[in-house]
Amino acid sequence: MKDLKAKDIMNTEVLSVRDDMTVQELADFLTEREILGAPVVDSEGEVVGVVSCTDIAQSTTSEAHRLLERSTPGFYEHGWEDKLGPDELGRLQVAENESLPVKEIMTPTIYTVPEDTPISDIAKAMVAGRIHRLLVTRGSRLVGIITTLDMLKIFFD
Image (cartoon, rainbow, N blue to C red; front, side, top):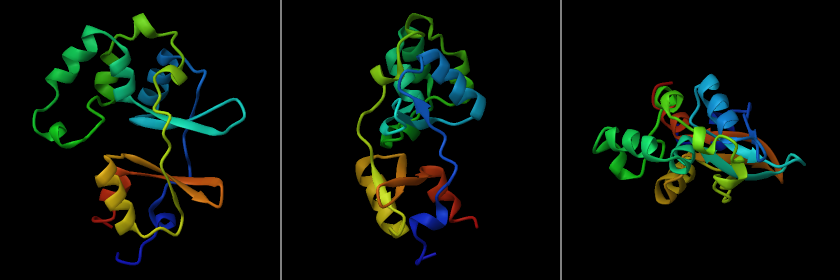
């Protein structure tokens, strides 16, 4: 386990969303795939940010606040961003912002690591930055994604 690198644990199938996709389309996309977030690409296919269930929740009104407040106390107080799972996301009313484009709610900061980065460095970066998704690169090309779940899986393989 000590010698594992990003390329050893990354997902090579990177599911991304377009920056012009609506919040409703995004909610449907994440719910159908049972994922909590994804990289955002522009019309040229360049990665321009990341978006998560939390971003959707923060873009909505009182229903989102009610669901967030109902989340399990304690677990999320330590930096876990994805307070809404796919089930809650499906119940979240996004009607007020359903036509808002993803580029309006995404986080424009992109965190990447080269594919040969040791997992110990990845873990440190994710914890220090409270990052739940790191994009993996080979040169300037995107080749994978590592999530907090991928990091946890290494303990059970």
